[in-house]
Length: 391
Ligand SMILES: [Fe+2]
Image (tube, rainbow, N blue to C red):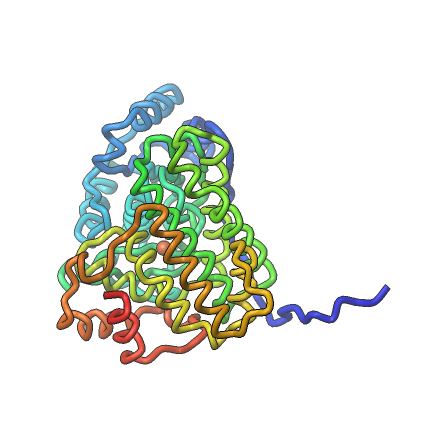
């Protein structure tokens, strides 16, 4: 028997993940975990959308049954704003809370992380922008994600909208990894089809960017590729059959896998461009990623063609015997068709971006820490070109 001579990555790499429970009805463990982590009075962070579903009263009942007091903070917008985080801190302190429970999509989870770090580090949320700027651990944080895409429930990322300067700040630190995440496919059944599509494309972008990141590792590769396979096979089906828990479970698992991958390998230009764009026009994060992903693949492909060819193979795209250029074109075309099939048809132009905005958007995007791990290091002009192509 001969050894497989394909080289593996042997540079030093670390892998961080929180404790998580995955499976149907995981959310019902919220009361037990609050108690186990010493919750005396809980700040329950959520948003208006979730407060209109049965998930919030159900969690409240679980806390009551454990004799745990709680205060609900639901003033969280999509693309959570810095001042909302600071308002949440006030409520946390005034109510003398000692644990945070977040129930919602990425915006809610990111806002909850922001509340946590500000409450123990006593600085404005803007002070934590960038990599490793947090010095004191936050209070215990339990996350229950209600969408399958963001993976903020397992990641080292919190994204907060700098409302005055109209861009989204990336806060990247091991300190924002939650203590426990309760990852429950059942809660996905209240997502509408467009939210399912956008959050699914966010997960797909996480997996793509982690796999081609220059900080990839054998561990992140494993999760990234499996996330792509699961999304390719199940995302559209879950839109057609929203109550099929098997399909919802597979998409939730894909989101988790993509989250573990990107949390540890970081991201790239899809996210640096999306953070600037999402903050500028207050657009849904997943939709921004879906619009930008094919254009970033086009920009990056020649830097890591073997990696993109592996993605194409897992995505089920026949590229054998094709030239490098043909393979790239097939992959880009397939992503465009995939997002169109999910009902994401917008361009930047019909989302309201004007030609004059591109320079401002690129100016902000070039400062985003996600560029550092993009396989092709961009300059501002490159980012302008990608935005222009996505118009
Ligand atoms: Fe994302």
